[in-house]
Image 1 (tube, helix red, strand yellow):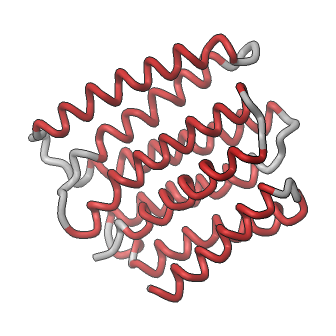
Image 2: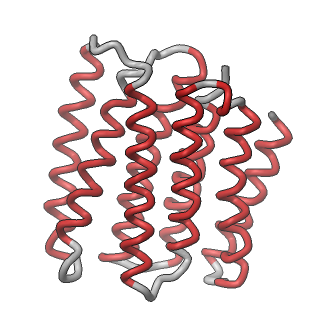
Image 3: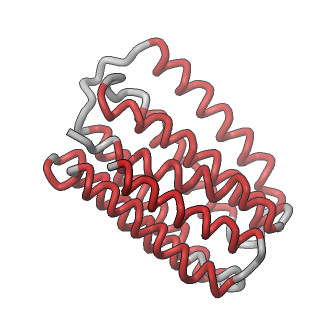
Length: 212
């Protein structure tokens, strides 16, 4: 597993450098490879051996398609398609979490729920006036799906490899906040410093959470 993680880190680093340098040609190489990397990590971890792992793997695959769709920064249609792919990925993660939960929730879960809902509402209220026409509803739906995914991740057993999933969920949500900032508020290659490590770190942790 160590060598697989090292290769993955190299690919993500290559992608980050290409984004900071605004080298689209290199991004078209490194981004799909990095996406294949987190799929490979899940397969190597044994994702196919459990229902939880299979559903997480399906989410990773859908998100990989989203990564390819978001390579274009000029097409609003591709951006919406990419956002839809990620929404399906979040829904897959949410479904995987629900296969492992008993319905009995801790105080930590309740606190995280309140903080998550409050944070999501606050962020969306800040972002909404900055959104292009026609994007308010899709972004609102997407925000609701990802925050629900984050909340449910804290209902997983807090032991073994699944402990990676809540960390991954939070990292993914924060990376999406920076994506929204980059797309709708302050576009800049410097946003890649936050987006790329957080996103690909999250996907790797989701993949590692499937270990048995």
